[in-house]
Image 1 (tube, one colour):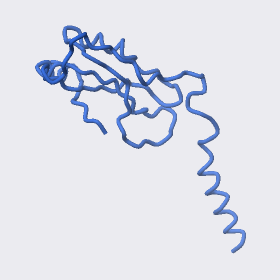
Image 2 (spheres, rainbow, N blue to C red; image 1 turned 180 degrees about the vertical axis):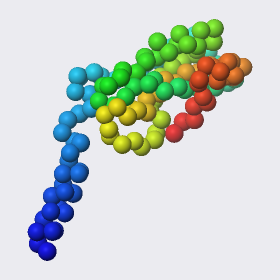
Image 3 (tube, helix red, strand yellow; image 1 turned 120 degrees about the horizontal axis):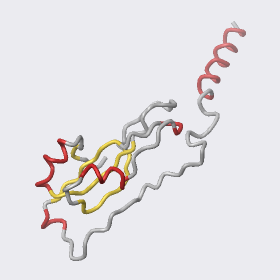
Image 4 (cartoon, rainbow, N blue to C red; image 1 turned 135 degrees about the vertical axis):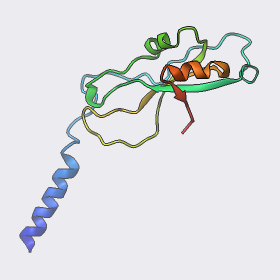
Length: 129
């Protein structure tokens, strides 16, 4: 019985520590969470009827795939005026597994009248989590 308990404790210990041998970003890549595009002077959000939209940046854990920067993804919104932008996490829990999605989003503030165009490009309305 004592051997069985020791075996179970050892297996449990290995299961909890097996994936924690290093940080996912081993290459030293830093994620800049605040990449803002400054709004024009005299900007008043309530008069514009703006909406926040978001799209996954496509990044994968352990640096297996770098996500699109805000500047790169802004090109997808060609013809749509962007008032502000930032990086955010989708707020969902994920397994810490190399190759799994990170949950990082690129969030953009646009005019509400441009929402349907943005949705056709794969963006969705961003709800603050």
